[in-house]
Length: 319
Image 1 (cartoon, helix red, strand yellow):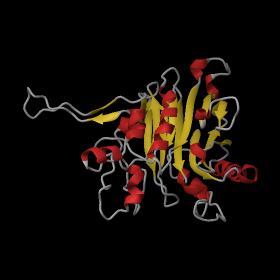
Image 2 (tube, one colour):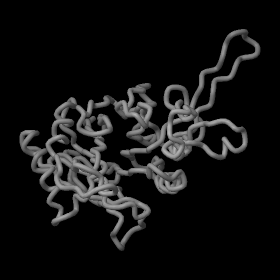
Image 3 (cartoon, one colour):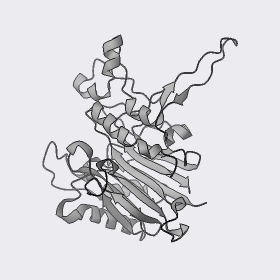
Image 4 (cartoon, helix red, strand yellow):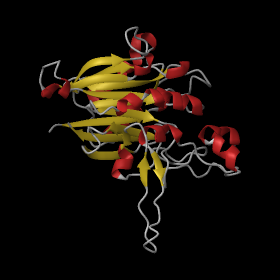
């Protein structure tokens, strides 16, 4: 058995001093990304950085500079950067994946622009461990990874994107998805509970509200549909009518065959630091399919040290 270490960091605007939607960026702080990773338990074999804003400018100067800073800080790990893209023409704030070329052999990478594959494959990598051997046709060695960033503003766009992720639930090959869901799982401790707070701006909370439920029943409930589509919705435990005071435990039902690692290990540590507009909840997830759900050896939320508005997540899997 060999262990693979994955890390997910949602690095706000790729380290830019402001969002390209609201102002003109003048500088990028790539050192903050290095500091976050140094705060983890080990250097990743596979790193996903979300919100790599405009890292493709000047021939990819920013992503190659980030790879070089990671190499120097890690003592020589040769990180290779691969830039993806966002769906729905949402701008140059795409995920960027870094692989340790000494350990991870990449066979396919789809950035969403190639003419030879479906657009829905964007952010997907087919890879294997270098120490597993050199037979490129031995499918038992390969696994898939996927980087995705759901739209923060549109519930419909979120659903369109997670429906395109359903193939990762296919258990024929191990698959892992690195996801800023901009929403939460359903169930106690996962759901947002402050949506009906009158002190909050309705326009800001709107993407998180289940408006169909509100229209039918007049109550505010969080929209957990995107992650429930992938991982299953939470079903409350039922009371055993024949045993007074006893209830069957709650569980997830349905879904497209994916499992949140945070849910599997029962760790509800928030991945969002305290913020005036957001409740601190788990919105950054590493998802695995059935092939790896019982092979998780490590899960940890990495403190972002104030360098970004998301904490990092690291996961180790036995291959």
